Every structure is written in structure tokens, then in C-alpha cells.
Amino acid sequence: MSVPVLYIVIPCYNEQEVLPLTAPLFREELQRLSETGKVSENSRVLFVNDGSRDETWRIIQELSQQDPHFQGLCLSRNRGHQNALLCGLMEAREKCDITISIDCDGQDDIRAMDQMVEEYLSGAEIVYGVRSSRETDTFFKRFTAQSFYKLMSWMGADTVYNHADYRLVSARVLKEFANFREVNIFLRGMFPLVGFKSTSVYYERNERLAGKSHYPLKKMLALAFDGITSLSVKPIRIITSLGVLISVVSFLLIIYALIAWAAGHVVAGWASTLIAVAMIGGIQLISLGVIGEYVGKIFLETKQRPRYIVSERTGEMKEQ
Ligand code: UDP
Ligand code: MG
Image (tube, rainbow, N blue to C red):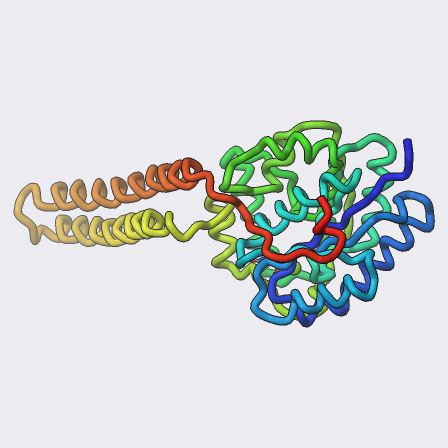
């Protein structure tokens, strides 16, 4: 087997603080990998600018002018982490043998790439990066993130526990993955569906080197709910929240009605009627919301809109 060409794919959104710090680290890792003969000298670091509003794209352009090992794609607007990553993977797959996707904030241990490439060389087509501890995360982040994985598996989504989007995927897998045409994408749940030989590599997760997280609780909840949020299914989600709210109010009403009944302040049949009406109302709205969520998904899928649009490319990425 000849030496594989590696593309490190990195989505970036408003990362002007952290990019100048981490870009050299990715470059170093690439250098080390090619010096030890594990990957080809033609390997690249590919940044995907996800419609940043700051200087991120300018930084990427400068990097690629100084050193052709850095390449970049610019999306026409912010499409979210998953779509940006998908774009990078799809663009890279024709040019390389393996891709490694990683966040640009230095939280995931870049050195774990050594082991990932080794696993690939010994036969794995997908290598999942798994966090061995979350000590550097705040308690809140750790708790919410772990509940998220538990909820996912409880709901029947096949994901690797404590694996986010730090993973090695071979071009062979990406070729098959390109046939997954859905617009509601949740990559970490989709790669296991492709199959092929896979394995995991464990690493410690660090703190962000600079800048701040784009995944506050609100975004994480949305991710947990359906993989990807979409503006146009929001009204349906509001119905669901309304259902929950009404259920809570009904519950309080139930308690109130029971107390009133026990105290004998009611006409016969009042409590039971009230309970039934309030309860059923709440449950119906929740159910409608959940069904609506699926209808919303179908709505988006039938449109088959493009999942990303590339507006600019650096030098090498212009060649097809
Ligand atoms: N990101 C992106 N588009 C977005 C939000 C985030 O491409 O709309 C990128 C971001 O630049 C980073 C990665 O996704 O490289 C993970 O984001 P972040 O570090 O903010 O999330 P966390 O690690 O806190 O979950
Ligand atoms: Mg991060």
C-alpha cells in the first residue's frame, strides 16, 4: 500500500482568536506524520469557513498563501457545524485517501491523530476519537453532554459514547457516504450506518485555547432533539413546549381539584371533569408537537435543498 494522503478537515465559525494559535499545531502534526512516513507529503489541512462574521476567512486565506499545506473553503453563509464538516469531507474525498475531522479550538488532542492513522494503516476504515475523561469541562457541560449521549442511545440512535466529531474516515467510506442524501444530518450517528471496519482511539479533552464555545445549552438541546435544528420547524416545536406547559398547569390544577374535593367545596363531578379536560388537552398538544416534528423533517427532506454552498476556495481547492 502506498503512503496515504491525509486531509485534516476543520470547520471554523468566528474563530479569529483561536485559529492563529491552533493552525501551527495542525501543521506540526501533519509534518510529524509525513516525516515518520505515515502519510504523504501531499497531505493538507483543510479549513471550512462556516460563514464567519469576523476575520476567520482572511486568516485562512493568509495561511494558504504562506504555506500551500493549508487550504480553505468558504461557505456562502453560516450553515452550522455539521453542514460545514460535510462540505469539507465531500470536497476532500476526491483528493485524498483519508480524512480526519476535528474542531479548530484545540480541545481535542491533536496528537491522537498518530494513533488514528496507525489504526487506519492496520485496517480500520473509520476511527472514532473518544474522550476518556471530561475533567476539563465544567460540571454543567459534562452533565448535559452525558445526558445527551444517554438520551440518544435510549431513543435508539446508534452513536459511539463520548465521541463527537473527531474521527478518521477513509475515502472509501466517504464514497459510500456520499449516497446518504438527507438534509437533516447528524454525522456521528450516520457513520456507524455506513458500516466497514471501525475502531476507537481514546484521548483527553482539553479546554478551548481561546474564544468561546458555540454550543451553549440551547444548541445542545436542539442537537439532542433531532440532530440538527432548523428554523422552519420551530413553530411546531413551540406547540410541543406549549403542550408541556399546559400539562404542568393541568398537574397543578389536578392537585388543586383534589384538595378542593377532599375539603368538600365542590359540586359532584366537577373535579373529575376538570382533570380529564386539562390532562387530555396537554397530552394532545405534546403528541401533536412530536408528530409535527416528523412532518417538519419530511417537509425539509422533500425540498432537497443543497446542504451547503461554497462561495470561495483557496488555490488548490479550485482544481477539480
Ligand atoms: N462551528 C461551525 N459552525 C457553527 C458553530 C460551530 O463550524 O455554526 C465549529 C467551530 O468553529 C468549532 C466546532 O464547530 O470548530 C465546534 O464548536 P465549539 O468548539 O464552539 O463547540 P463545543 O466544543 O463547545 O461543543
Ligand atoms: Mg470546542
